[in-house]
View 1 (cartoon, rainbow, N blue to C red):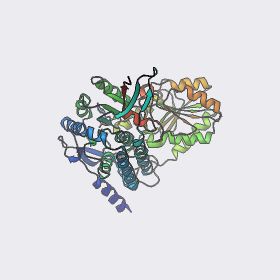
View 2: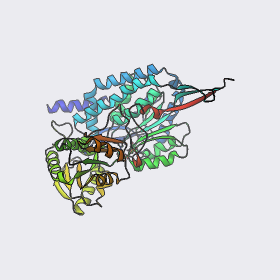
View 3: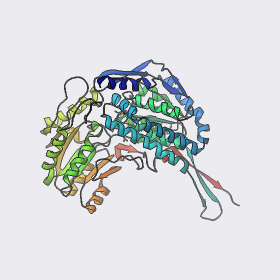
View 4: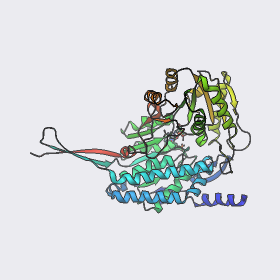
Length: 490
Ligand code: NAP
């Protein structure tokens, strides 16, 4: 059995191309290779091409050269390429899931869910490719005619994070291909393998060379800077931390680059006294523990009505304490390792800060010794107002529970953050649900459910969680310009 697992791992790793993909060719990186680690062991897993700034510029050359032909490519065929890629991903879902678990650490079941979720964006946008239209109107004075057309923005730079190595890519690549844009994709250096496998699938699906160019690099700031400064680039879509998003926005101001910013979160999870408490606990497990807590939409703070807080915390602690921690490939594992040592040290620091200020541990609270970057599933309560984890993104399996006494207090606490991506709300009172939803300053709300992501819905945030929407009918708008034609009828 052990041998089979090892063989499967070797097989999926061997199948992944390790080079840059530029203008339809797989090329070496000018800077040699960069190492991808297995977070469950800290050992090297693979080496992939390390691009130089000149390699990145070559990718932009290819995207710019392919731009006008691709914009004219029949929408139906653009959609069919996406559809073929969708079908190939689904047929290889188990292998892609294993690859993702190896590079990112999450349990296989969750990787498979991400692979299928990621593929859905390609199916969704394959259907949207043929629904790009404009409008025609008679001018209000009855004389002229007004015609609008929707055209692709042009070459796009798509930068993605490590926490969802495939889906954060397909959410951008799907609408970009559907709209007729060419692109340079830059995955995070911790997890380039899923994106390399996806690029290979697009090649097999008949995507013409130059439409999608993939650059993997160990120095993202150096390699991306010349692209952001280049006037041939027309759009930057970034998913990652607010800090890096701010820096990229500042660079992009030089060329007034069109932007989509999917940034960090600090989601409140509010439980009112009238909620179905067992359902709230189950929702909390999903909202907190999905992706080992390393999700931008992860519940970062639990705000629970005083009357039910003890019961909620006790039940949540029991559920988390029972979750099996281990390598994501092992049977029954529900909590994998954190992505690297830096991420784990940050989680430990935030917990120590809260405990040092008087918080109480109900379960967990420790780094796990041995190889890999494991951290215990943790619930803490009696959180002081100045604990850093109330205002900073934890990005780990740690659930802080805080109490509130009334609706206004819950809303004020929930909104007391610079972020505004997702929030969660548990109540049986429909009027309260609508009242509180209207008052919450987030782009998305889970009402009596612990997950909001859906390819058919607009995903995105407000405040310092960024702007722009991915998925839904809105997703393709990010990749289209509106051109207006004034028609003289005199
Ligand atoms: P990150 O450090 O901001 O990195 C994100 C991407 O940006 C990576 O590909 C990274 O490349 C690249 N990058 C970093 N510095 C750059 C620079 N100066 N110029 C150009 N590219 C640069 O974020 P992360 O740690 O990978 O991801 C976690 C963050 O993403 C969290 O804050 C999370 O909330 C957020 N996130 C948001 C959403 C959303 O939809 N709102 C979804 C998922 C994640 P290298 O890593 O290769 O250097």
